[in-house]
Length: 121
Length: 388
Image (cartoon, rainbow over all chains, first blue to last red; front, side, top):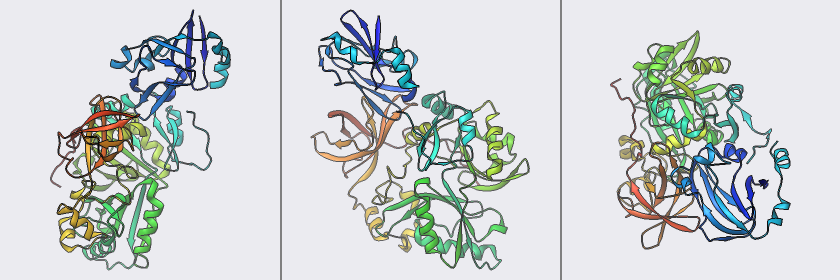
């Protein structure tokens, strides 16, 4: 599985034509305790860079921009009751939504893990 | 999201301690201060409500205003210094007993709030004719210039913001402080006294900004780190950053200057009627008295309320609507309450919408969310009131 990263600290983990989107461990650490997540709707069509979700920490709201274009096929409803999953498990249980990609080639413009590591160094 | 180095920011005397503790340093009121430590805002908030939280508030503005020509008679000298300050604020300063302090408001001529502050009469007769005046960080230069100009030639203002000012707050604060500074737990709420700790003089008041019992401690710069670490050595104490300080004061319903109070907001609009003393109301001798007294008889155009917000937190400047969709005000402080596990907010609304239980709406990201007017504080105060 390939994972790609945006400059705004979203990740997208590719599984065939499906992308799983969340925020990185670096991002959750910077934001601090997450207290509320506004999820996209299943069926919603997103263009790359569209606002897809909102993650709220105690201090502030942060928009999550879609790393790729596509259709939302699933959202992580567990975050509604337990938004802190983004802090405790950003890569796994804290995923935000799954996207059926319009064009997997879009991901080529995003950073790979090595580049993202450099970006956050 | 990253915080860039900014050399124009000042550092507090405990800067190295915050860095050593892993504090995340952010710019705040011209200083570099910890917004949180590694455990995070929610854990820090809850620790303070259950045990004792230690806050560095050294960025704030403690000062000492001293009468120039003292008579040597403590009561006469207190009356003289109080008479110089009273025309600027709403409290009964003349009536302060030694060691007593009051929360008050520095008003402009229109009755708007220049700042909210604490004024204390020192307990020692040797300091009669002086007042401790503790103002907010963001307003201290303007406040001190204002006070100095108004008392020029008759009193001298000495700023004391180069040392350490620590706040210890929470249900275990008294036991912790007593172990270090015997006698301090005998202080009544809103009183202060000089103490000695390990050969160093401290000025300690029983007060705070969290709704909990606790103390604020003024210590000289050279001993601030030693005192900070002595307090942290107690397992009941953890360091608490600005993030939890804000969520704690929000739950306690306490206004934050620059947000819930500004130079247009009067004490009555802000619901701080208690801070306008009875004697001063009758004498009508404080700035903007005409407006403030008219508002007290009901001629208000807006009033501060507490709101329970359904769903996402409504942040500062979110518009408040009635159930018909008419805009009636705005949120001035909003966030998440770790104690109640829900969104809460302070805001100003037009009269007729201030009764607890009133159903309102707030706009968050273009959508209406339900909100209910709620009596303040959101979380009950637990001040220790005793006869003093």
